[in-house]
Picture (spheres, rainbow, N blue to C red):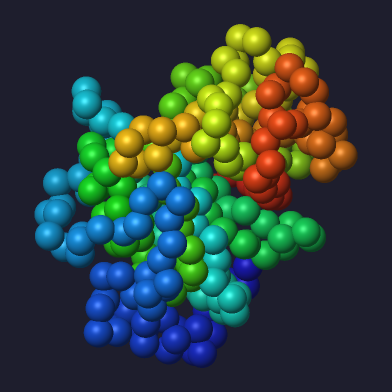
Length: 250
């Protein structure tokens, strides 16, 4: 990313932040969620969930994938906005399971953002989405939110593999079945897994699919792992495979 934001980017971001609905921003006008539609104005929820740096006994895990809106490259290159995003995420450091941007085919430009974290409630997850600086600035055009069951029982920072190979985010949607347990997955897949868990709907806890992040030599290797019958992933019809990298301060 460029070392400094240009004036056009700053002016555009300022315009969005001071829009008539400054919490939701322009991007939320077209908000669409697989798990649930955004509910009431998050300003009504209070700020208790923000700034939590430890996991409370009754917290829930959520997976949030925010897809970039069109023509937001300048916003992505805005270093001031990037710092605001990082500062916001610092407040959730202790409850974060995984985070990072998805990337285009050339792995040069962001196409979305993944955040998997523990929060006290569904309302807190909606609040997290609505108040995140990139969202308020108009970077995102769509958010997918699910409850997440962490089947690895660890965070991405506990992944033991070296960053010598590409990384991928895979979201498989299905309302018919849950993912197989990590213990029954092929060993060659388990050793490459950074994230693996079941997705369920926000409202009723119904099965919604599986999400995983892994490291592999290339896309062809990912496809081969997906097609292994022991993974149970090949039978899922709605599958998104994204180039992905670890998020956080550089």
